[in-house]
Amino acid sequence: MPSQTLTFHFTDPEPQRLDKYLVVCLPDYSRSRLQTLIKEGLVLVNHLPPTKTGQMLEGGEQIDIEIPPTQPSYLQPETIPLTIIFENDDLLVINKSAGMVVHPAAGHHSGTLVNAALAHAPEMEGIGGEHRPGVVHRLDKDTSGLILMAKNDQAHRYLQDQFRKRATRKVYLALVDGHPPTPSGRVEAPIGRDSTNRKRMAIVPEHKGRLATTEYHTLESFPAPSPSLGAGHTLLEAYPITGRTHQIRLHLTFLQCPIVGDTLYGRRTPSLPLSRQFLHAARLTITLPGEKSPRTFEAPLPDDLSYILKLLRDG
Image (cartoon, rainbow, N blue to C red; front, side, top):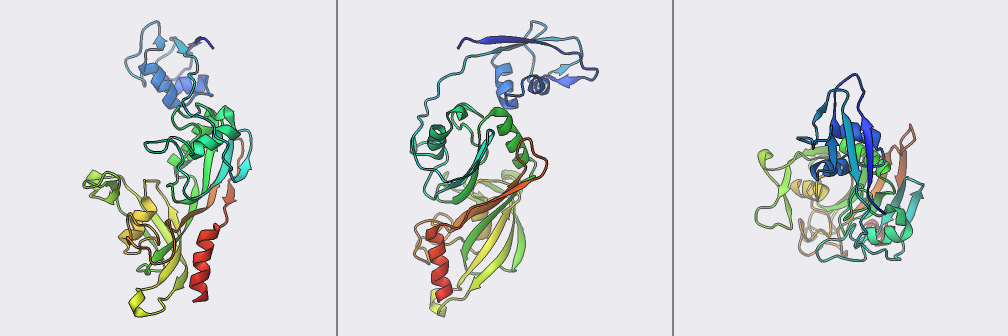
């Protein structure tokens, strides 16, 4: 498909940023994608390249934008079973299994959620970027549960805006070693890259990290069978207010209650027979494109985590 040149004339009575105006003119394109086109010199204002993506339009300008042809993605669709909780023309709500990486990265070039989603919904290719098509938010490889995938740019932008504005409610189930200092609480501790291990995140001084906030509530408490086996365990609901990498895992470790099976931030040898961290994205409340009221989606606890709870309840 050849490139396409479109022309618009700015006639609004109030000044407006160029990138914001183009989002209105081209609703199928995300603002970040349009900003990239501006930076690449594919947008002209009165036949001249703009000085910046946010250049102000005052009135009467002619804007020409060249839309380059879609480049084929290097990502390959793979027929991998998916547990789809909900689907419409705009998005997929998927119950991701533990062990599945969300998108290709170093060491994981295939077998990812993106590869599987592209086989199920080929129209997702290129949505939100070539390397992470359809990805609205992420879950760690060994965290199971609900994740959204957008099928078009409008839905992608709409859904990401809700996460950015903290207009969603996410509820995770986490089983931790020990007991938190209070049955319910709130952790506010900045998160940044660990200076000694680039594969880890860490609680850092405010000027070196990003604000991160997690609330939690105790659902069930399990005493240790004997003092020699530690302080027991607690089943929590965790509510991340922000969305930093490894946030829940770090904040619970900060409370000296690391997640069972989290060998990166908790015990190197899990206190219970579990091969991954006990963390599950159980509920997600969000407003879908074209709807006025939020919906809540739920994903049942997977068998490996249910088995651990049964062991604790049976004593």
